[in-house]
Length: 111
Length: 110
Image (cartoon, rainbow over all chains, first blue to last red; front, top):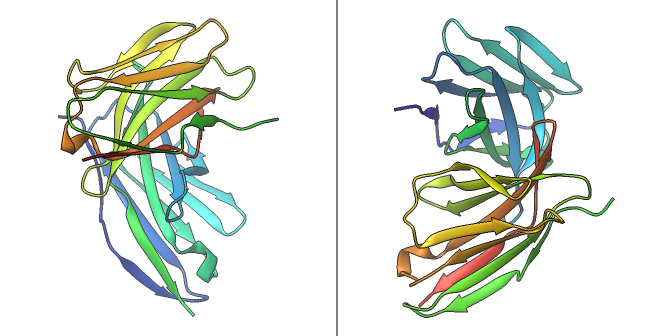
């Protein structure tokens, strides 16, 4: 069973701190990994994509990928109340282009 | 560039009825995917169309069907509605692997 797992949360983080979101996947052949943010009542929007082992930084966001351990994480530095949302991890199976989604982690940034 | 447009935004139907949802992708995007989102199950993949052909299909019963037209617009149909079909239905178009979601259609089945 190919799966993507995330802690559903909620994860509560003080404003200004680092929020760390984790995602594990079961399919070793997965090659593409995505983090989407979904505000309540809104549709998901892409935050980061990562394809190679290591870190990828974009502003306050850093995605980390470890294919050997089959996990991908998202770090949010200097967390702001506007970062409060559900963060969805998605893993792409290159064999058939299908995205497999985690259930999402609800993040709450407390002022 | 206009985003992904889904119509209608809200629908209320009764059990046994059928419903058709519409999705207009971003101009130039040839891939359209459909998802069902519920609080308990998260995002569940329904199907993906590319150049009028279904390229992938999720694990949903045959009551769920879709199609894509030559202009890349897509429709999704659900027949014989059940209470459990109440959900947010999201359409996403993509180019080069990045999904762009519409605002969704919220379907309530009573």
